[in-house]
Image (cartoon, rainbow, N blue to C red; front, side, top):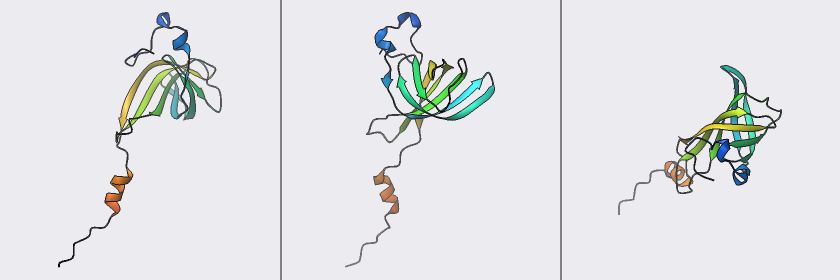
Length: 130
């Protein structure tokens, strides 16, 4: 896939390889809106993702044409203390599909590591005088 810098590729440039969905099974929070009216908020499980579309599993089907925003955790490098989330905005396309309109990566607060937590829990020890 080509990098898209936050904008999915146009339909004219898509090919069969780009139509393939990559398995991404992550829980995501979502908000469905019709104009300014909030329709529903909840959590879904993502199933597949490509450069223009996200497929989800939800308890009930979403009607086509609604505005949707999803936020899902994204893998960060193991050496990083930061967490990353992807914010995807688009429209529902029926059959539990979302057409991606734009996406952004957000840096979330630092992770707490076991090493950092253990420094906080150890009592202060004063050396004995000899």
